[in-house]
Each structure stands twice: as C-alpha cells, then as structure tokens.
Image (tube, rainbow, N blue to C red; front, side, top):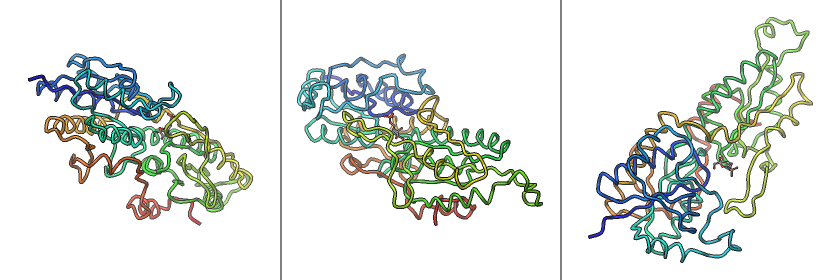
Length: 367
Ligand code: F6P
C-alpha cells in the first residue's frame, strides 16, 4: 500500500510561529512513516504546481525562525486566480493533488485561508486547518499562535515610548495592527501599562481621550504640588480598527486583487489631529506596522505552535479532515472548518480584561 502523503502550506499574512508548526507537524508525520511535502507560497503552490519534499533536516532547526520556510501569499485564491483574469482554477488544484497522490493538505492560516480550505474540502480534497494570526481573531479558538509575539512587540514599544514621553511630557500614540478586533491593542496596551486603550469594539469619544490627556499634562508654569510630581505624559495604545463614535475605521489602502481588500491604518494620525488643538503637550504618533509580525516567536508561541502542529499530525493520522485544530480550555480540540470560515472573533464587551482595564483607570474612550 502507498504511504500516506500530506502536503503543508502557509496561507495569508505570515506571523511568528509558522515554522514551529511546520516543524512539529512534519516531524510527527515523518515519525509515523508519512510522506510530507511543502507547498510553496500558500494556495499559489497548489495553483501553479509548486511543491517540494520536506525531510527532518529541512525542519529540525527552524523552531525559532520568524516568517515561513514555505513562503506565503495573501492574494492566492483558487476560486479567483487574479493572475488569470479571476478564473476559477480549483479543478486544476484538484487534478494537481491527484497527480501528486496528495491524501490531504494541512493549511496553516487565518479566516481567509480557512474559507478557501473549506471550499476545497467540500470539493473532495481533504483539508485540515491550523489557526494562525497575530490578530487572535479566529472563531472557536481561544488563542492563535503569533498573537503573543505581537503583544510582546507592542508592550516593548510602549515601554520605550513611555521613557521618551516622560522626558518631554508628551502624549505618545502607538497604533497597533489587529484588523477588526482589538485583542493586540488590549493585551499589548495592558502589558505596556498604557494610559488609554482604544479598540474597535468600543467606539471612542475624542472628548474622553482629551480629558484624560489634560488630567495628566503639566504646563511649563504649573508649580502646584500635584503637577510637580506628575510626569505629564500620556501613552495611548490605539488599534488600527478603532474609530470615534459615529465615525468609521481608517482605511489605508484598498487592494482590489486581494480576497480581503481593505487594509486598515492611519487612525493614530487622525487621533493626533483630534487631540493636539486641545492640549498644551505635543502629540506624536508611532505606527508599529509589520514590526509586529516579524522576528522570532516568543517561547509561548513556540510551544503553542508546536502543540498545534503535533495535534494536526495526530488528526491527519486519524483521518480527521475538514477540521481545524483549536485551543479550548487549554486543550487542543478539533472544530469543523465550516464553523470557522468567514467569521471574526472580536473582544466581547464583558471580557474580564476590559473590566480589569476600567478598574485600573485605563481610559477606553468611553464617554
Ligand atoms: O491579519 C494580520 C494583519 O497583520 C492585520 O493585523 C493587518 O491589518 C493586516 O494583516 C496587514 O496586511 P498586509 O500584510 O497585507 O499589509
């Protein structure tokens, strides 16, 4: 009987920990006698027939490497091939999988990747998902790997911004990624000790943020005892998807050839323009951008990615396809791909961290 043959691909935006999943899944599958192939640049590899064998020496040393040894693609969609006038090339993908005797594909990605995986699975190519994204916004899993690494970058940035903010008595705005969910800003802001945290789930009142900055600022001639001991600085952590009450999110770019065409970004600058006329302090904005996605995964993410990769391999060996590995109550479980596809997990307003932030006196922009 032919050996089982499993392909692995990484789809959508990269994040720290992808290589740790590839490593864990590959080593576990090889150990069980399975043939493993790496599909290059996400679904583009399936669409253009680019795949290479993965062996132990290929993966053994990649645990802490950022990025992905397989490459990724955020526009590759077999149901809409932009390189071929938007043609549906899904049948070609299935033919390629048959020709290479692929029994199944492990796809490591976010909601866009899971949506495509679900459709291919329905057409007869067995798929198995592993949840990645710095945004932590995938349905039915309490955590995605990559998130902890992004939070670490935000916390470090806030720590650095705080010292320079204090030196000048400035307001420092730091804008995080996260798309339509505020997880990165909320956890990064709390970990860095931000004075205000603005997330998409809570529309902010500019007056509330102005009032918080005014409470903290100190004028050059202000010699009252409380002012003498105040450093005058304010650090605001704002998620790229945050918006003022009644306003809309700030769109940086529209990429019409992408399955997810909206790129958010720039709310930090808008906020600066809203605050500055009302403050004596200078206001500066830092946009962290892709720094949050680069570099080594944190030890937490290395372990989570290893757990996910191992669990995916076990599911493949059991023939448990059409599922995604998920973390629930700190255990790796399987959830149906169809229940994840196209859904976003935002911060619930009654989340304990929202309550904790409020009780610490962190301004959430609420009126
Ligand atoms: O989904 C991950 C993410 O980094 C988001 O936080 C961000 O909005 C988006 O991807 C950026 O995408 P791109 O890398 O295409 O600019």
